[in-house]
Length: 192
Image 1 (cartoon, rainbow, N blue to C red):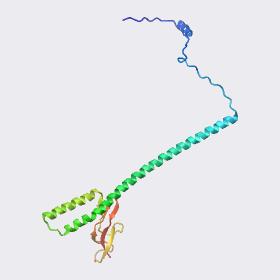
Image 2 (image 1 turned 45 degrees about the horizontal axis):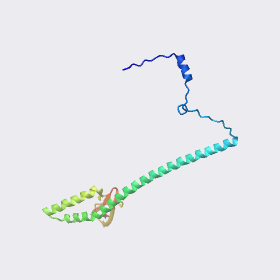
Image 3 (image 1 turned 45 degrees about the vertical axis):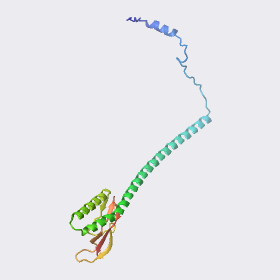
Image 4 (image 1 turned 90 degrees about the vertical axis):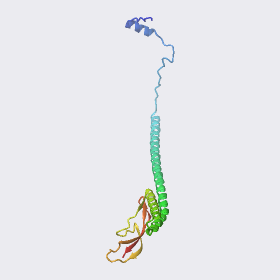
C-alpha cells in the first residue's frame, strides 16, 4: 500500500493558482443569462394588465366549473346508489307480496289440522317459510286495538257490546310490511 502524501499549500499560493485556472469547457461554466431592459408604453402596460385580468378570470371560471362538475358527479353517484337500493327493496317487496298467499294457505290448512306427524311436518314447513319471509324483512302488522287506516283495511263491521267503537274485533287476513313500506294491509272487522 502506498501512502499518499498531502502537501499543504499556503492560502496565497492557492489563490494565485485559482486565478490562473481558466475554464475552457462552456458546459462546465454556463454563462449568466443576459436580460435586456424593456421599455413599455402605458398602453402596452394597460393591455398586458387587461390580458392578465382576463386570464385570471378564465382560471377562476375553470376552477368553478371543475368544482361544479365534481359536485354533480358526487350527486349522480349518490342518486344511483339510492335508486339501486330502492330497486332492490322494491324487488324484495314484490317477492314477499307474491309469497304471502302461500303462507296464508298454510295457516288456513293448519287451523283445523289434527295432531298427527304429517300435520306436525306441515307446521314445521309453514314456520320455516314464515322465517324465510322474516329474513327478507317481512314484518307482520299489529292488528289489535284501535283501527288505523294507514295499516288496516276495514272490510266488515261488527256490533259488539263492551267493545269501543273503532276497535278491531277480528283479523281476517294478516298484513305485512317490508322495510317500513306496506306490502299488504291487514284485513279486519271493526266495531261500530
